Image (cartoon, rainbow, N blue to C red; front, side):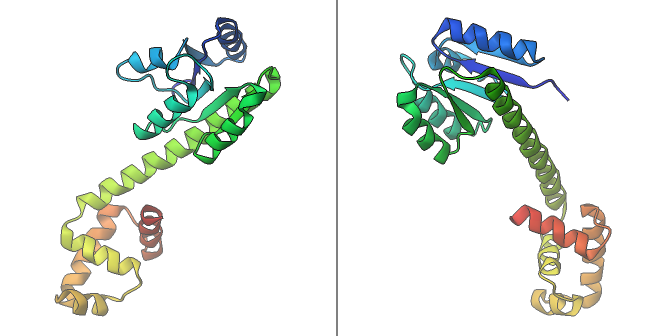
Length: 201
């Protein structure tokens, strides 16, 4: 697995450098930008496992960048860096999906703890997303009729009930069912139900 990367965006050069050195000492890679506008000029936008984002910056501020990231479906966790007067803004951002916030001056241990927690959550979310994508690919490999049978199996219907609903013979349902189990890699009906439930949740 690739080493996690932390993106630092702050218009204060001293803060950028101190954050970079602190993360480096902890074995964490970082990429640094002096403003949200500089970050947004990168094409494609740099990806990271956590973003340390100043709320107040010239040009596009941290909250505006956060909104842009959400619109672009870039889901990495954002930890806002705030002054004391910006705490209500940071709380509002958390309600909109930000991971956390830090008030200046922050404790090194607190910052590292929040960064590591954000990275851990993100990597777990990404692993689950990869698993769901792989599962969806298996569903997509089934024919439309096999998908019909699969959905009804997941609802607990017996072969005979599925046959009546779809207007096909029970023997045909059995054949479709065998194909579904094979393509989905499901060892049992409960396993198939769990797969379908996870995709629908």
